[in-house]
Length: 340
Image (tube, rainbow, N blue to C red; front, side, top):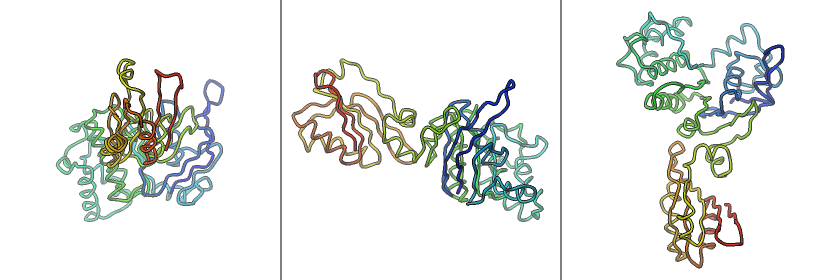
């Protein structure tokens, strides 16, 4: 487990100190895939470097499995760093060595013998889907393949934690998907705790269990992804859920409208039709769409509502775990909110 407690970090700039992190606290559960998301300059990379023991905080503590890393130096610090694998946006690969040779480099430095080394490299090539590229040189690979080689190299020494700083930056969407799949496999098959920093909300939507949102060096949201998207006003929900665009003319066809967030197979597939039948009302989808949070289907719909028991139908939907915000723009009674 990684625990970051009230960490602050600043750097000198033009004769002043500029704060990169401001009293940041997060917890990363062992074996999870944790996302740190935020705009450029929000402090994501600085946080990753503090966790990787590449930077020391000005204040606060980083704990790895209960160990206060701020008290370490010398040999003990080097030992703990070996438990941390780091992948940056520019893969640290040797141009003269093959893909397999690059992955083997950390094992050679540790003195691992030939048969064990070859076995480990073979397993990692399979994990990252590059067995057929083992004998090629880095300049023969795409940028996405280079990122996957870098992940395999970072995993070679068997770290407990893998930190990937903006791993999909500057690569094609299909390559980005392959890199994220490799990080997910590392977590699932090797039991590695993975921390990903990214400015791209779609990255955390696709692979992360938990998320911390950074802005101007401070944590503005944190929690499980599914909990955060249940609140439509959260930054996470606005960033990862389908957008809703409807015209006044579309809404005016109905007695009222409501924005509904549905999470899970049963809710997405059946909750609206069942409510319509149970309460004899019309619930027509007029905006929004479907997405996935990891393997979980999630929908955000705007529905047009018509019928005498519309309020009861929407309350029934909310009681079953959906988040429902009802508005009645054409009537004087104003907006209503019904939340599960």
